[in-house]
Amino acid sequence: MTETQDPAAGTARPSRRALIGWGGAGLALGAAATGGAMALATTGDGRSAPDAVDFHGPHQAGIATAVQDRLHFAAFDVRTDDRAAFVRLLKEWTAAARRMTAGEEVGDGAHGGLPEAPPDDTGEALGLRASRLTLTIGFGPSLFAKFGLADRRPAALVDLPHFPGDNLDAARTGGDLCVQACADDPQVAVHAIRNLARIGFGTVAVRWSQLGFGKTSSTTPDAQTPRNLMGFKDGTRNIAGTETGRLGKFVWVGDGDGPAWMTGGSYLVARRIRMNIETWDRASLQEQEDVFGRDKGEGAPVGKAREHDAPFLKAMKPDAHVRLAHPDSNHGITILRRGYSFTDGTDGLGRLDAGLFFLAYQRDVREGFVPLQRSLSARDALNEYIQHVGSAVFAVPPGVRDADDWWGRTLFAKEA
Ligand code: HEM
Image (cartoon, rainbow, N blue to C red; front, side, top):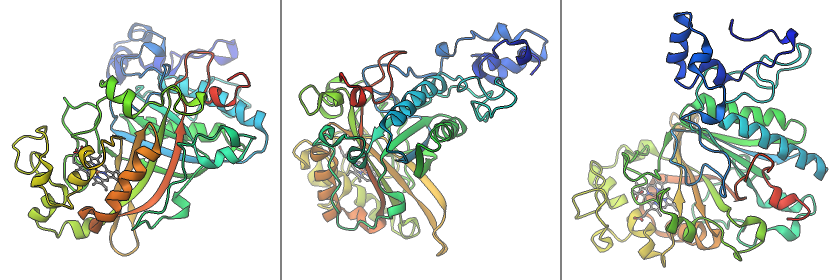
């Protein structure tokens, strides 16, 4: 990289954005090839990246944000009793997250710091775009048993009950906190989680993590609805990112809902749902369509022609997934789904370990996932083909307001 400056001369190196420019790799390489200065292809300011999602706002990004293609989700356990050290980490994480979501390297970058010290950034995202990276933090129930936080735990952050059919693996369940990284480039999402884990070394440790390779939900109804690993369109009747009314009613924690520190936040339920895809693939098309109550090609509800036609629930089998999950069958319960498909090798029995990493945001878990899953776990025809094998729940605090704010300030700051 001839355009970087000599650190020995004491000049800070430009960010990975500044190196590559907003036109993307092609534009930057073009400039290099023609001998043009890289500065011509760059603004030098990561925050103006056209594919960067704003890190700041009243709500955290990564919830109502248009769902990106890839996921890396990590649950962490706290490894310290020192509240000040944990708060310091949250501030360091915020600074790193602010830079990475803007397409910048962490700190002095992958090769810009002292030669004697490990670099501030691991480097594998150098030259990649911001890729609409969002980083969303959440606090698990077990965190509130630490740092004198017991009286700040929201009532809405319930421990999830055992549901019929649950076969949870403790190694993929729970967590003191989580970070959801979503991006259109898998390496950008992985880089973000890896760097947060690296910064947190000694203070937090990764408890479990999950990669997702394809979105199974959408917050952009005008775009093509993605398909899950069962081959069905998924996310058709999800809350759209632009529906401020429904987001306010069903997703964002409102004033007076609980502790003030959560106002503007949300609650996240994560479930690793294994699909018995080998069994599914042997089921007839009719059976598959009956299970969901929608047709496989268009995604239309039974008896209707188009995907977005309103479902007529009584036309579906009584145990059809859509019939049971629809708000009309659940006193209006509505959640925002944001899940991803996964395949994690084999289960050792000659089958793929594949399924759906279900992520759902809601204003109150007691009025969202819990009653919905109670109903589904008891009766859903889909249960024959799936099994819930991992589970976690998190309080997702409100957004980071500005450059001086940090993740978790409303929970930890004395005056909050
Ligand atoms: C592997 C597991 C699952 C698969 C493959 C799956 C698949 C689907 C599909 C294909 C649809 C129809 C299209 C749509 O409106 O999005 C749907 C709808 C829905 N699902 Fe699931 N789902 C799964 C698990 C769950 C769970 C655990 C919940 C909640 C506890 C849930 C809640 C819903 C809701 C609320 C709807 C929309 C119903 C409506 O408004 O019509 N799903 N799901």
